[in-house]
Length: 112
Length: 115
Image 1 (cartoon, each protein chain N blue to C red):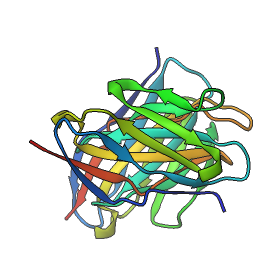
Image 2 (cartoon, one colour):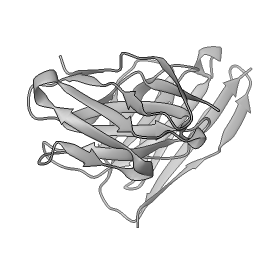
Image 3 (spheres, rainbow over the protein chains, first blue to last red):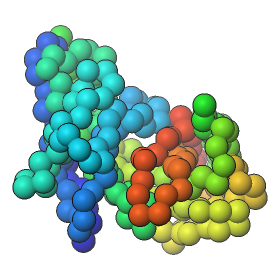
């Protein structure tokens, strides 16, 4: 079955530290992969997406993600976290019929 | 450029009252439209999606319904709200591709509290 797993429900990092959020997917073909960020009380904003080509994709706000087919992963990274990065992060895979499948989300807390 | 509008931003409604949430998209034609719900601390639950006017697919049986009276308008409704309908409702749109997706653009959400 097509699915997305975000193993970490909650992650806490110190400001200035590096960040990696994990995402594993199950998909029968080459997936379209996405990372979204949601600030409290807001909608989801697209950070980056992968369709094909270079497996390392750059996004907004200094984020990047690497597609690893052999590991069925699409982990999100940032070299140095800022306090404003505190939010909920969602990984998604598609297309699945006319929809996408979202992970359960990882909540990021940034310590000063 | 494309924009998506969702309103109201917050809503407090008594149990048993009706509901109407509206979502409109500008700057595109023939979008796929979606309604999602987030319960507190939970992930995204797809409620309805639409690939065209009058075409609604329901993912979760419940007392909510959706309608698409115009190409870029998507409405979420209920005749009688339940306490369990409380949550954060998100509208989204995507370009219509065959066998592909460019991801979704989300509205800013409606916080519904049923009391």
